[in-house]
Image (cartoon, rainbow, N blue to C red; front, side, top):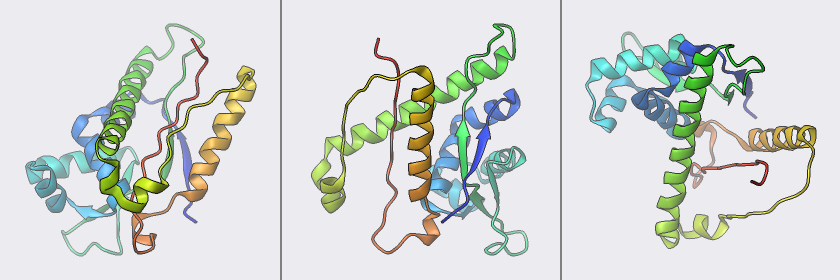
Length: 189
């Protein structure tokens, strides 16, 4: 089982670095499909290799990815995602406290929700094309009555469950594929 490190994002610079659209795509690609070089990623995304390399180094500077030393040789660097349980900043108690981090976190959260909605819409558009994975997939809506403390505990239990099932793409058995999991737990308006 892979070690998942919790990281509470509060540094505005790290949040802004992570919120960049190409960096989000690069990180998501490394998380879902495993290590790659800047040349491989540049070709996959139709981007300039130098720009791709710059954005990878930026993600590495903030600890979101790292060089895969086992695969790298000489100047040819393979990059891999660091297994992280990323947490966006909550609403600060003081309205003036770290407004920049809060704004960057809001934008990043919006991008994550959009990606989840995009992935769900693409799946629902043609569930049959996913074969046995489409049959095994589940969408559910439910509800319960909780206190704020219970909701926080419920969320932590969900994250722990997801992390127990998380694995590096290189360690996945044959026939496995990346599964998108979208979780929302919020007070009913």
